[in-house]
Image 1 (cartoon, rainbow over the protein chains, first blue to last red):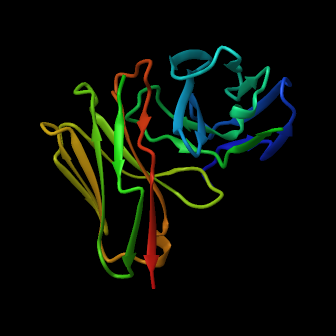
Image 2 (cartoon, rainbow over the protein chains, first blue to last red):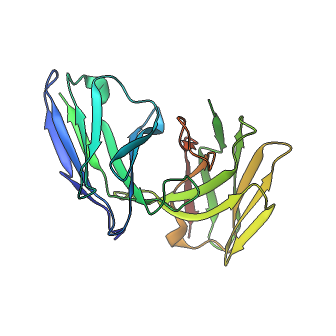
Length: 114
Length: 114
């Protein structure tokens, strides 16, 4: 168990809908990272938050947004969903805000858009 | 941005033999190179990492080598065991942070044959 909790584990929704994925980082970790994993694209970095502030942005679509709350949990919001958004979404957390600190991954949320 | 190529995509070795996975990267500014292991149904787990001021690092049966001039790094697993079967990802990033975050290779499915 990495200590990073993601909910829900599975999500099935229709095209055009909006969903929210939740992540609770390890106790004491200030950074939260979101990744999307699909068969053809591999692991793609979406966005990082550090202590409530956006720190780095990757290949995140405009239809997607995220935030980190004062208690450090984070939510990833996906809207106007398309079939191609079906993927595993991982959250990871680390103590520091730099990439050379070990990041611990959660078990992921499998999103299926039908 | 950074581009990471990983080979092979599938590797099958006999139990007890060695396995080598190779990655190349494109951005000479990258200075942090972690390797992750992902078992079925779980999130990626960091197994070893190396920074650009080091050429080799070992941890029991696992070693990583880095050639900054050629921009490639490799994972070596010796005396492979059934529990080594998993998907392995290499990644490259700049420890100062930045918009690209960590860029992952597409993964290698390592199969240990009994």
